[in-house]
Structures are given as structure tokens and as C-alpha cells.
Amino acid sequence: KDTDQRSLRTIEMQQKNLTRVSLSNKSDSPGAKAPSKNLVTATDVWVWGSNEHGQLGLGDQVDRAQPSVIKFFLGRHVIKLAAGEKHSLALTANSQVYSWGSNSYSQLGHTEAVLVPTRIKFMKGFTAWDIGAGASHS
Image (cartoon, rainbow, N blue to C red):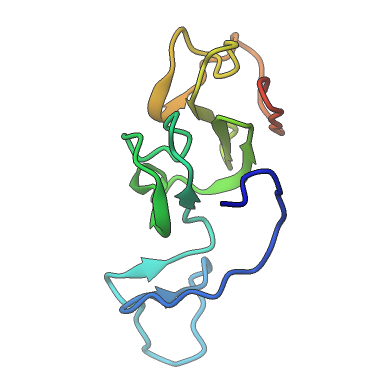
């Protein structure tokens, strides 16, 4: 088990019955309609790997060997993700920040750990433009 090395790499995967669609309303074919189900868009959030602390955001603490979509984010237009050692963050296009996973150092911005994406409530008048995560901070 290679747990000490971290790297980014492209992973080839096959998913049946899925179609990637453009986020624009334009179509190259006259009268063409977008499929109504089994869509994968550029803003879907897919996760896999260790989930001991709920950092995958799927509502449980079960490790995943195969990619799974976080259904909570469907239609929420996630523009950025950040991953700490045991927690995760997401930023949406309307400046909402969500966090989930371990909260052992209060890194989630909530009073306790959560297993699903939960919106961080900022002080009135503040807008989030970016997010970042370290091992035990956000």
C-alpha cells in the first residue's frame, strides 16, 4: 500500500451511459436536444480513496476504490476544490464555501466534524473568492 507518496496523475476510467455536455446552451446541430439523464458536466465533483474521516463527502466513512459523484453538488456549479489531510473544501460560483471531514483542529469552520458538504457561514459582508487547505487548516 503506497500511502506516503502523493501525486497528480490522469486516471483512465470507463463509465457507461454517461455523456459529457457543454455548459452553454449552444448546439452544433439544429434541433438537437441534450440528453435528459446520465449527464456528466464539468462541475460534477467525483471522489475516491481513503474516507476514514468522511473527507469524501458521501455521508459515510467507507473507502472508495472507484470514483463516486457527490450528489449534493449536482447543479451547484463548483469552481474550486481543496483537500487537506483529512478534510475537504469546495467553492461555488456564487461564493459559497462548503467543508466536510475531520474537524480535529476546527479546520471546517463548524463546531463538529461532518460527513457531507456543509456550508460555512461567514460574517455578514464577507465574500469568498478563493479557498485553500493544508494538513489541518483551511
